[in-house]
Image 1 (cartoon, helix red, strand yellow):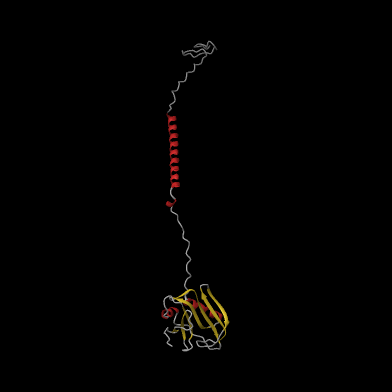
Image 2 (tube, one colour):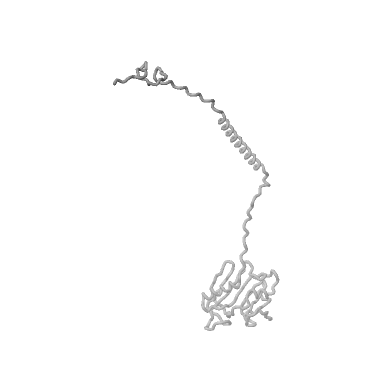
Length: 245
């Protein structure tokens, strides 16, 4: 059955057009529609950007001006208004006072290390001012070995003696030939009791000498004023009682 043609053909190309009635164009394609023209762009974003940039510039200029004014005011301030902190140089502390009781114990320890039978012969403490060993003072103790087998106070010494000196520099020892001294007991009348009963005037320099007193034969503290050869007071080494000549 032959196909029947419905519709019309294109006059230009002979293509069979649709059967439905429609508008026929010369080139079989509908013409392009013109795009609608856009409206004029708004200027508002540009204005906002310009205002923001201007605000930043104004703020920066104002901050710079304020900082410069502050620096100029500080530079123009009088020198007297600036507080200067001056650190005072450290004050040299005075040397600690010597402790005769402790140093006499250390001297005895040195003597016993030197010889097991070392016995005390004498003690010299000077200068003593207002109940204390003055700066530059010393405590000198002498020990020796008994001449025979007998030990204790009143024994003759022989051979070598040991001198123990204690001062601000420390404790040191030295040996030397012993004399004809006699040993004495360790004083029961300690340094604090001696200076309390010494009887010297305030600020007076004293010399304390503990040894065997020849006249009484007792171990005693002999108290001298500076420069004197004879003691002005003697105290019993056992009980601090004043010895009257």
